Amino acid sequence: MLSRLRYTFRETFDSFRRNATLTLAAIITAAISLLGVGLTLLSQKGFDNLLSKWEGGVEMIIFVNAGATEDQLGVIETALGNAPTFIDSFSYCDAQCSLDEAQVVLAGEPGVLELLNETNIPTQFKVIPTEGTDVDFLRLLEGEFITLPNVFDVQFAEDQISLIGQLQNFFGFRLLLLSIFLLLAAVLLIWNTIRTAIFARRREIEVMKLVGATDWFIRIPFMLEGLLHGIIGGVLASGGLWAWNTQWTNGVGEFPPGSGFAALVVTDGYDKTVMLIMLAIGALAGAIGSGIAASRFLDV
Amino acid sequence: MIRLENVTKSYSAEVIALRDAGFDIAKGEFVFLVGPSGSGKSTLLRMLNRQERPERGAVWVAGRNIVDMPPGRVPHLRRNIGNIFQDYKLLLEKTVFENVAFAQEVIGRPKHVIKQQVPAVLELVGLAGKEDRLPHQLSGGEQQRVSIARAFVNRPLILLADEPTGNLDPATGEGIMRLLDRINKTGTTVVMATHDQRIVNTMRKRVIQLDRGVIVRDQARGVYE
Image (cartoon, rainbow over all chains, first blue to last red; front, side, top):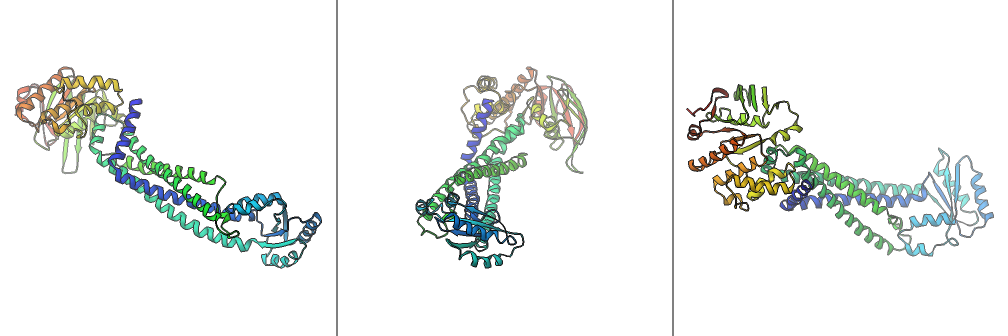
């Protein structure tokens, strides 16, 4: 068993050495495509952050000044409760809830976050309209709500969601498409590298077959080689993603407050998950490319 | 040890490599396959280690019909069969020792067994002291000896040799034949395809003659003709 393991690893690394240029090309292509996949996932998460305050079908948010009294909040609640035909439900997001939300939405503006606390953060009423309610009608109600005491702003999901959604689809779709093409190129390149490696060693493989080596014994070093191409590509892409995310986070921190980019920063460890996903996809792409090549071209 | 029953193999409608071929080879026999180029000698050898399969007939090796042998069993069959070729098929970047050790390594022999058995077989073929040479540093005869050592190191039951002296001068060829005869005397069955009239006539072993895929002669202690 030990001698077989030794043989497998020796052959794998020998092949890396012999096929250095093609190996490097396969790894770089895999890394770039995986980085594309990673950036797609990160940007989607950023857009999700931007949309987080609109989760659960919320269409309208009434922002209330910090320090509003129970009575003042009660007036708003009553006004919302008096329109059951148009408003299905509403919830109150208190200071703590608003602070939690700010951690996500303002992740890229640590300076602003630092200034916010329970005494100065505006609280919110999140409004879910009844099915079929025309948002234009809610806009009419806005005129009523905005005049209530301590209400300082009313925002509509439609305004933000349509723009963010459009951006999310625009970037997400194109990045994903590019990543898929690059990933396909990586699989093909790994496939070609392994095919070339098999061709270069055809005489050896012929001898191996004649002396009674099993197909799996011959195949495994090649498959391991492809798997390593994918994994190394994944590691490089993870490094690239980390560098990109760090640069992006630092860059966004320097933008003026309220620029709208703050929520596009991913700081909750999701980037680590994306790196694991990239490694897994890299390993899978490597295994598929080399597995097909090793099975198909072994008859030398 | 080997039995062919009505074996027919064709590569196309016009090219029939073997036609209703049949014979028995007992354990420990030394058999020459003779006949002109294209008579079916190499096809027959390739059939014995399952590199080829016949359209019709049965090929029995060591008590098993290998025609319908599952692919997963073929490597185990081949561990009992050594192969020697006219062009040696050595791995050029490996040393003499590594070439021979390779045959043991790929079937999972432990390192200590390899270290013990490879020098012994190199001694047997007369290559002691040349373990570290690369193939291009050896003469043709020596390269063929490496090939024989590689074929014999796993102590196969059968040795298949396809024109092993084809690239060698007569004196070197005789040396190779003496070596094959020695291996045969250890109980290994040897089947050798050859065009070398002198060798066949000198050795006086069993001769199976093929002509356009048909066995036209099977003679004990035969000559080339």
